[in-house]
Image 1 (cartoon, rainbow, N blue to C red):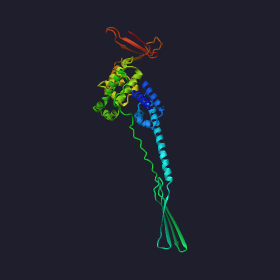
Image 2 (tube, one colour; image 1 turned 90 degrees about the horizontal axis):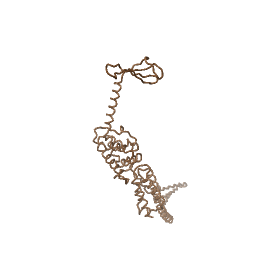
Image 3 (tube, helix red, strand yellow; image 1 turned 60 degrees about the vertical axis):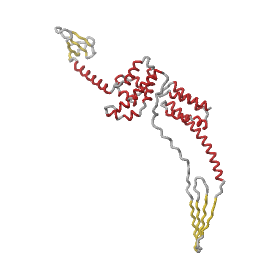
Length: 368
């Protein structure tokens, strides 16, 4: 049984390492099937301790794939329940033996009489030592009887120790860091082409921290802590997986889109786009639909905006002035509400060309 447990878990761990992000993939399905088979294997505390699969399963409960994370957490809770039930049975048997031993003890009573010289008063003190679990021994009972001629006064004082419930210290749950831990190495998918793309992306994202710290803009340097908290390996795997799911292989029909995205992510003068992808401002799922203008750096975007504004200004300034008249009749709708302008399209000794537009039906014509 131990061998079957270890082989099944190794298969699940291997498939989980090859699956880095959410989404349906063959490796994720293999991992989920192996985890469900582990749930059906009957285990006990001795097997779990000898194989140490519980400790090895814990990282899978924080896997980035939501399905693997849920099934692994359920399996971890089931194994934990098995261990607690078996330990509870053992502790229950030992507690029953202790209770039977304590019930056989005889209560010790040590009476002690104290007599005062006065004949009119007497005091009787009884001290009981009771051996009860959870209660301090030594409850004291005092009876005082005083006689004063024909008058008798009885005072009874009883002091009982408070019960002290001793419960084992509950272990505090270990604080887990928010988010998934950083990867120490790149997760590969056994495809040379895809693995090469992942390596190039990881190399590009690894430079973002240094580029952010050396940036001249204060607003960029202020987010250095956010950049350092990101995992370049994990982001590289997510980006490559998203591109592969939407665009297919990099050598297929979308080869041009692959090249455009990879060029902008690795360009030395485009640090802004790399940083936005690393910190999540641009999601990996949105990269296949991103336009070239959105991939440009902040400086390039500002230059493009200035070029557009200048071209728009020159276009409006260079337009020929138009006049409204009723001298021309539209041949399409018969209306006389038209606009026109004139340009010298031929030689200087030729008359100007008149361009007419109907305001009603937008019909265009010209004449000399």
